[in-house]
Length: 207
Image 1 (cartoon, rainbow, N blue to C red):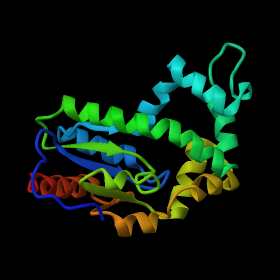
Image 2: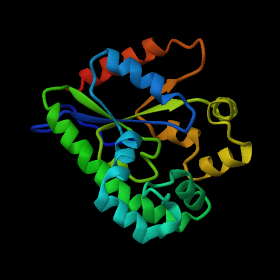
Image 3: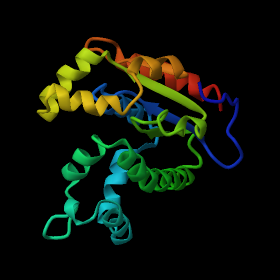
Image 4: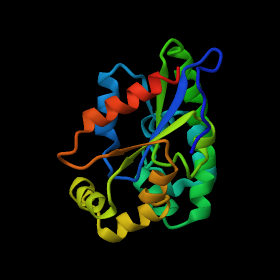
């Protein structure tokens, strides 16, 4: 579990990570937190914007060469994905480019919402890249593997082998659930809003 704190550190809200395996439905859970007025930072969305930054693109070219660029100079993210999901060393090098930037941007985001009781940092790889050591609490959104596979096959039109390869780069959903401070069970018919409200109330008591 992440370190426990009973009040806001001076000058900033509590940092709360929301994580879970791919396909677990983190987006729907985040929508519930937003309805409660909680500022939310989605790491993947922010990282996607980096691919429009010329300085970042130069670093990507240095890492992968020209083979991941289209004729118009834009990045073919599918080409990058096909490389990094088959080569752990390249995945680690790409993450070394992306994740320090993501964290700096999150800290800046939190500073913009300094009066909020807490802010959310959403990422599927909170534990894999030690973001849990930087936040105050972690919320895990849980859904079993078979249900996630079913959803992802419909959503991404991906094969089971492709999904297995993506999941292999993450901790199991069960391990994330065991390590988290809070768990939201995101099955259809489960009272998602009630679970989010419970977590929200608990976090407010820490401030």
